[in-house]
Image 1 (cartoon, rainbow, N blue to C red):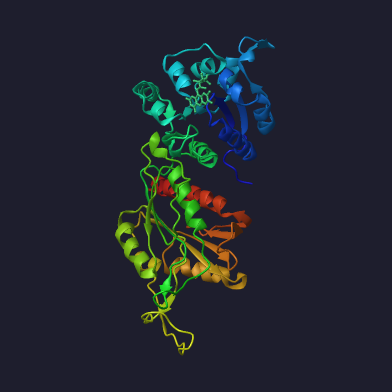
Image 2 (spheres, rainbow, N blue to C red):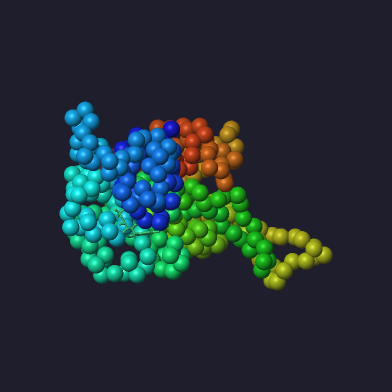
Length: 413
Ligand SMILES: Cc1cc2nc3c(=O)[nH]c(=O)nc-3n(C[C@H](O)[C@H](O)[C@H](O)COP(=O)(O)O)c2cc1C
């Protein structure tokens, strides 16, 4: 089973901030995802919560100040811990801890471990808004940033002290996404990726429309995976979701946050695609545009008493239209949905007709589901089959295949 965090060694420093309650959930989620999480607590952190909580959630020993001056089997803890983590997270990073770290102190187990580690260190500050805005805190963070510490800014909202403002520790799921993104190679850095997603809607009258069962989940995961690999993602879809739980990678890198274009009809989706596609390196057509629409939408609202005769017409074919202006360096990916007995023929003829480099064939039950069967037909005419795999896995695997294809083309030039 695919899992980016499986067996990853994560060192988690916990300080004495009120947002410590969220850290329990972070440890639980990381551990559930297969990571090995070792927690080091400051003395103040232990005034908020017992080390036993983290030991239980992580299934690992939790380290405290008591361990600092202990040597077991000739091992010095802060040096051993510093070497053991592939990545270090400090959450919540208190104003006090930030200050001590910025001045290079090694007077506590966690501080000494940080000075000794060569692993990337992510700090998640969390505090009262006035503390956050204090120039001393900001200067310390600036200094830490200049030395390569990765600062993930707090979010805005209700604070534990009753005030409202910047200072909240991000939600645990967002913190876990930062860690997932960390472990993805930035293999698509500098590439522009167009992704279409979700169903389109075609008006029947002024308040009703016809649509289909597509959920946009595939496009969601593709956008996330493209973003984590450093690509400039343009997501064109009909869904209202804002991608708020995507980590803000721009806090410590040049990776732009995915740009969303909200559209409704197939015609609107095509119009936006036509503007973006020419400059793209990769286009993935995972939307389910309606193939037909009422020819003349009824003005006003249709009444039950009226005779219902609706004439349909075929809508624009987005990927076919774009295939006519496709440049040789562009990689395109399509999706084919049909009954199992017809699926292969349909997918292969669609791949050829629309000049797709890859096509993913999936059964009629796929829309809206988290898991499905998939067959990927590649540019080399090979195929890969997956039974009951997640859309998150498919998104990650497709982007790996696209990366390889870019490399293959580069190598053969
Ligand atoms: C109830 C309570 C909540 C606190 N919450 C925070 C906080 O959210 N952020 C912060 O920077 N300090 C907070 N503090 C202050 C820290 O606990 C204090 O500065 C402590 O010395 C930090 O130690 P540490 O950084 O070594 O864990 C809080 C203190 C109390 C009593």
